Length: 174
View 1: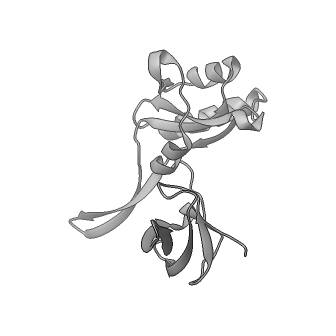
View 2: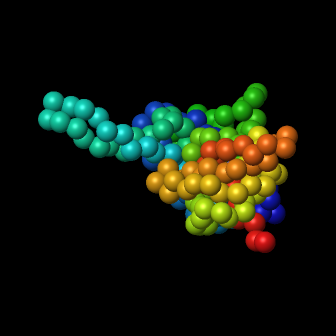
View 3: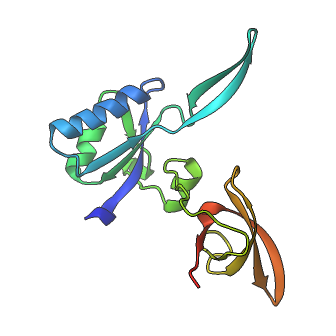
């Protein structure tokens, strides 16, 4: 059943995102539907604004008017979310809720895939995401601050350096 849990996008009145997110979680709890609606997310970004008094750092919604809901889509869960005050509908074609793909989830910043692995120069890795998926390579450089690695992969018989995000590679035990 866990494989049916997917992210869906719900359209809300602008400014009501936090209230809608709280109301969805509360309604799921009240109706004992936490196994159907597992998580609600409002992606935020930290921005530095320049105002008369200098610069000021603020958190703001990445996608105003939208709330992301991780749920198992059933008639019950659809009705619960759809009937929350402030929800105008699910994002999808013809009023049908369409789940986000794994790629969209990463690109939209809905889920962060934290990298636990600490890569070192000389480590053998496997590329697990992107156009070079499946290639093996050797770590040449690690930029921990930007969470990037430079990897040497062998393509067409030539050693080629490639810069990748750390989540795109995994350690290969020798």
